Image (cartoon, rainbow, N blue to C red; front, side):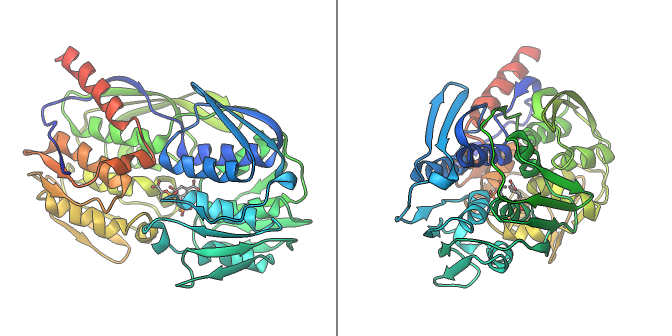
Length: 434
Ligand SMILES: O=C(O)C1=C[C@@H](OP(=O)(O)O)[C@@H](O)[C@H](O)C1
Ligand SMILES: C=C(OP(=O)(O)O)C(=O)O
């Protein structure tokens, strides 16, 4: 069924808290399941992707209970995880697949992993390669480098590994394997990526060393259960920030959101484009800064993306392309080749979506150019079942002359199940101000 949206003339107004961060939620579930004892996680994101990580941990015998904003995770520790004989279906979640592969590499079991059609098209050698060097076995079925595959884990040897791509998922997989491997495992990143795994190892009582872009972990540590609050997801907040800077008279504040520098490249780039955005760190949860962001309507001009900031805005690039339509001249987003390996080829899908709503845009191997001062006419868009593109379609309707029809909005539940509830709150606040 098609869904049609048209919010031109609405303003983005008020205060909002977005749901818990997806990256941190996956990691909190995994680390609480590795540790022996009971952890309480506040504000865990209960989206479809996180549900996959929960299901996997439950399959190993971990007890996970929900009570409002609290999630209780009780585990007998990874050394006592139950055997799993059935295939683990990881749905649409790249993070679950890659981080879990790192854990399974050290587990004395053979486990078959699969995923949905999108996940079966995503590259996995980037993670199975280094894990194989540590001694884990991976048997691919139809296509090498892709799911489904069977992981056969066991005793591993530590490695010193230079990442071939700037990927927090690959770094995390190696660190998770290293945590259970005698000796020191060292990962070198070409560009610093999100560091939630490192921060969470510390939060769960482990030791980890970071020196510039080199991260080392000494294995066979015992993690301890802990109580932890997950801050709001900056990748979810980004949709309202984008809508606010693009629409006249808007003024929104997002509270209790993660302001980890490895995640807020989108805001820094928008500020360079002239956006009226202020960020304030209000408190820290361990090594994670949390604060509020105020974004207002702005006049925008193009900027150039720096290579070393790409990982800090990787999931926001399609949305940045939409914002670029409102610049006073054309903007090129370059160095974004990794977008081809997400839920869909996001370079292709973003440019196609912009064409569908009347915007001129060009795609290249690892870049796209967006026509500035664009008239967004509206029309029917294809999301390829990608949650971030579906939300982008809704946000585009704030600056579109005609409705935008979106072929799939259910996929939004992958990362932001309360997206439409938050939208309603914003629209109500907007009505009060008008
Ligand atoms: O580690 C993580 O939680 C994530 C890392 C990024 O992927 P890559 O590591 O593939 O860049 C990002 O795109 C994904 O949404 C979440
Ligand atoms: C790429 C994403 O997630 P994952 O890699 O976990 O599927 C995303 O959330 O945009």
